[in-house]
Length: 407
Image (cartoon, rainbow, N blue to C red; front, side, top):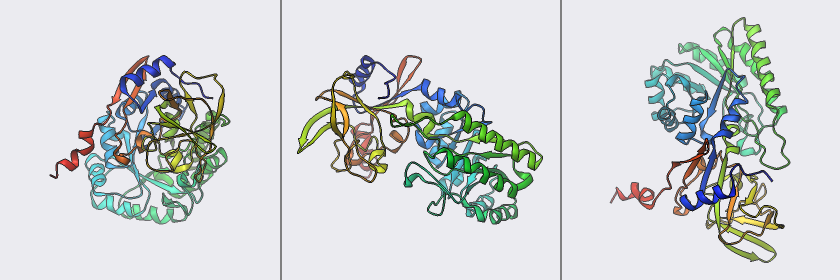
């Protein structure tokens, strides 16, 4: 079982003060992951993993730049103190709000479709153009997060790159960066294949190229049996690819990486309180006040998250199912890929006990919802031993405000 980064007394105190469900983030863990990647010329945080302003500010102060995928994420990055030239907008289309912001601020655009090129030129955009290329293959921890190959909508198909380059030149835009991202939680074999694909794409671009992006997708060890990726090997692989492209093109080339989940996932805990126990035939259920409105990954992907019961480490374990309050059968934290419950060996949690769901720093609060009119949970950042509330719990007035205005 993964150790909790905070003491039982601290966790109980925070839960008592702020209520549950409650997200808790460890700033030191985020900075540690960022430092592992500092050999890259640029580490660009994919904020869709967790866009809390406090985390964005922490990463900015620690030297990261930022990726945005919507007009809202551009505004978050600006509010967190990132300069426009530290932001790259990555998408497969431009809606009106995003187009207006990238034009007004000359924000770099990483275009995932060739149609975006003329749209940028017609709007008078004058930023740095990158192209996201689909190399023809992808890989992730689930099919839903595989972002390469024919079944993925993302990126410009590799065989269409020459045509996209022609369209950009005809529009008066030069391609400065190439980007490839094949999926979230990919394995090393597939990540390594991207280097070869990048080399071929770089040759097609030629002299205008200034940088390459390795994308993200670095895996996170969610299960006790998962091995941590060899970050040094991954880094050296991409530095070698950068240097080979620079030699071939006869000009300096920079390489950036774009981690999201890798930087923040392990830094986050989701605290929930046991509210009921029941036995359904041979299944022992532990019902908590957090659900897939707080952490959707198990329901969406069958994702695994370690679970511990605060104050009961070392007690006897037995198979139990941990589930939430929502009126959906999929509102279960202990389930397998494809659906279906998967009991977990856990101590005998009782009503009132505090349950800790691990590795919830990424794609937890950022994918939270008001389903069943549940309130969004608060978020706590612990930095230098000081716990600071960085998002208040939503209240019923906020929940209903946009509808009340229509009366």
